[in-house]
Image (cartoon, rainbow, N blue to C red):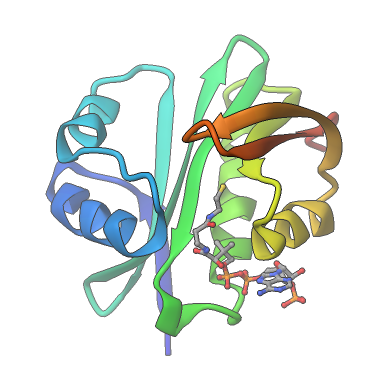
Length: 147
Ligand SMILES: CC(C)(COP(=O)(O)OP(=O)(O)OC[C@H]1O[C@@H](n2cnc3c(N)ncnc32)[C@H](O)[C@@H]1OP(=O)(O)O)[C@@H](O)C(=O)NCCC(=O)NCCS
């Protein structure tokens, strides 16, 4: 299996939306992904297997800080290093865009995602109470150096 990693294009939006629906409880709309195409701050990486989008991740480069918006991999492709490679690409491109640090919010009960981020040098930095749907806390994580 060869998975290809590349920057998102307009043609990818329906597939990205479909992956979003299968990965996240609180989904973005199709329009919100279309808007990201024209968002000068945004960069999205897609992972594709034989022309099928099987995962994606994105971030906003805000001055010298990168904010991860989301990373999702289809369930049948999990545990094979796909998110790791997407994150590698995001960290590399954030550095190219002049970012010195990277941050994100993740549900406090999302063990897989927290493990992914901790394995990549992100540290727990705070909690936003009831951040998700007024029910689940959001864990703030930072990687203070990208190099
Ligand atoms: C979190 C998610 C993106 C991980 O994707 P993945 O492709 O399976 O992750 P990888 O195979 O690249 O794993 C890389 C590292 O992350 C950690 N990790 C990933 N899944 C894990 C799990 N279920 N349990 C523990 N650690 C896990 C491990 O450290 C792993 O490295 P290792 O395989 O050497 O142990 C995936 O589970 C997903 O899409 N979840 C739903 C969407 C979501 O919650 N996204 C994050 C919101 S910000």
